[in-house]
Length: 118
Image (cartoon, rainbow, N blue to C red; front, side, top):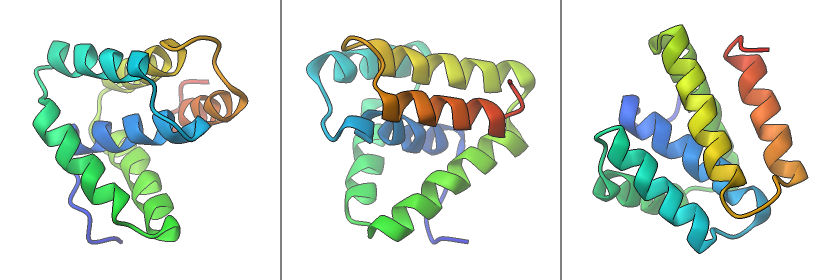
């Protein structure tokens, strides 16, 4: 287990970063979608920005570990509706800047499978 502390909010933040980073850049459209999504969930950009800063300091190996732990956290702690909502919000972020790329598709497929949605 990593030293990264996960809550409902930070698990979502980790997965948003996970999906955003699929194509190597975070577009303006993705960033704006994240702001809207987090606001609708009554989560804050401050927590998201703090989480992203912490993720940026991790090694690639540790980052992958935290991403897997975030998926597991959601699988264990979210209701079926919460799992569906998580997938939908990540889909919204992935599609916000145009067609969903192959890396994003693969991650969405993995998330759907891990959460028992497919």
